[in-house]
Image: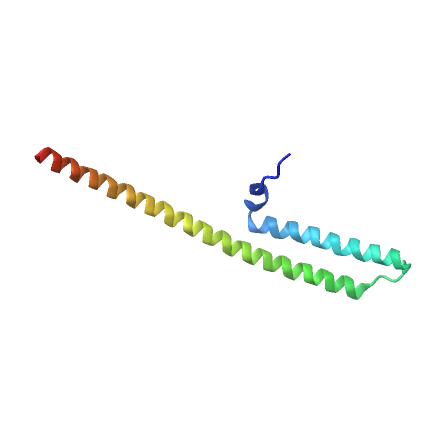
Amino acid sequence: MKFDPSLLFDQPPRVLAFGYLCVGVSLVLLGDATAMIGTGMAGDWPLVSSVTGLAFVVISALFLYGATAHQHRRTEDARRELETSNQQLQVLSRVFRHNIRNDLNVI
């Protein structure tokens, strides 16, 4: 089975940020629980490291949302500009062909 990048990169910014947030929170909590069990501190939850890890994930998810939303807006603007340019080029092509045909008819 082949990985299709469009499945990931064609998602709206909020879906990407929410997915990142869910995975990040899960990994922070899983990592802290694993470290707690591995060191034998089953009763003492390392609250400071969990809070800093979760804060980092939330802030980076907000940054990811902002960056992908900005890129999404730029892509849409570029697509609209390209469509406008294509329409203008088609009109210019029709006018040019019309003028060439008229000149050939005169000859």
